Image (cartoon, rainbow over all chains, first blue to last red; front, side, top):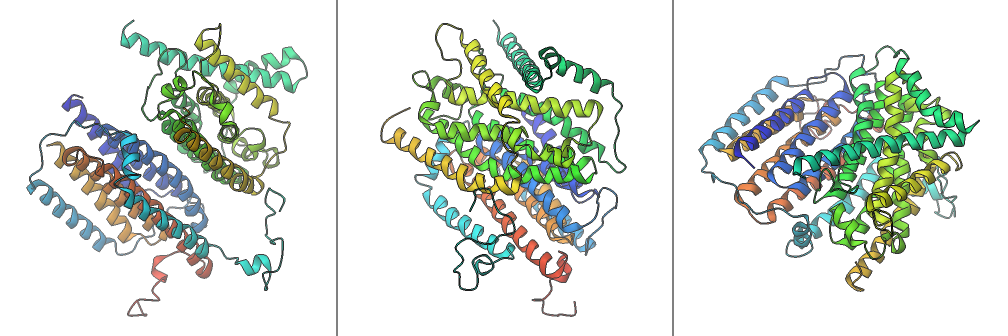
Length: 189
Length: 308
Length: 104
């Protein structure tokens, strides 16, 4: 692709990503804040596709839209008010936070500008197959680490979030054959 | 033919297939609903004329921006879904990750249907929105695994490759479970039939309840277009796409898709409505293991048996 | 010049996220800040793959960051649910049980 086109497309995506990312902490409506973050992710996913990382880019978009759809549910569950009507400002220590993040930004930019970076991108294409074979081959350790951590997260998440234990479901001696649940479920147990 | 002309042809064809398909699906649904064939056939056009002239109304505090985005998005997403499917000429976007692209588009429906319920600023609409997310959690994971089965068999995420790999035997023959799970997913993201309690009559229309005028038309149209796009994609992934004797390939793809759409329209009001509290267990305890089992069988057949 | 440009954009995203994570009071909003920081990491990793590593490791890094995001979301929501159930709110300012000075 032409370098000029590349830079223009990237700048548009970058603008969308940063502006919508900043809007998350500016706008009052929780639904709009959540979906502003989703737009920021979609823009970054688009940038990955622009870099040639098609599969990771599209996966990023997929996952983040899903996550933000769920996040909106939690936002509304915990805020307990109609955010479309009431302006919300729930911040603390705004000034130190601003100073810290602005300071870090300056530091990062100086570092980026001082470091010697290669001028030209490589032309190696990114293939989803290559990635899959790496994860099942010489990068297997990554997969083997992520998998148990994911599983532990599922268990830990359920343990933390669920207010009913197996004793509530199966009785004090765990001898109830059919669990007593507030919702009957769909498969007739 | 030049590249540009062929690209334009692909785009036009995609739009026409979606539009005509959606119209036919709605007319067929009208005929089934009665009272007469003529009334049913003219129902979609009559509804269109009525809704486009109707005045918009909204509750105080409605989030109009998000609400309108949701309606328009529901019409846009099916176009994105079909962009990776070869409808005869090469697809609009012959992406190497076409299957993931489709999946991403159908996940976007999560956000859009929820916003449709949220934007209205009405209780029943919001309850419908939450219902949709809950049943989406139950259909989406099985759907994802069902999508991987053909990709594993064809050694590719490109829809064109998957269609080409079925020249001998359509995948539905040896992946029937994945086929059924994907169709359930199509019904799910189209808020259709058994999986349509998000727009259920017990919620006075749920996410669709507060919509009026052109907004309602967009949402209803989007639902039919999603149904058509999902069916065409299923036909490409499992029914061999355009493969078939005598008729040209675009014709076969349309016939197969039409059969799927017709089946979904016929089943619409003939199965029990599954609220998410019921469907959640069905999704996680039946559909997900079925899809995983199917994937295991397919992987074994591909790696050990050398099938493709 | 492309790589520094991308990295500066990533730094901007990261700092916006940091500001949010530091200044927001609600757990879910803090998580949105963290997500934005990870978003910046994804962008930087993609650019670094393009310019520095013509092999598959950059892509693996992107996938690892995505996995970290899901873990962060899952645990964050679980903790938020727990806090909300026990305290009736999910403001970070009330979660000072482990702070050295309980008066704060």
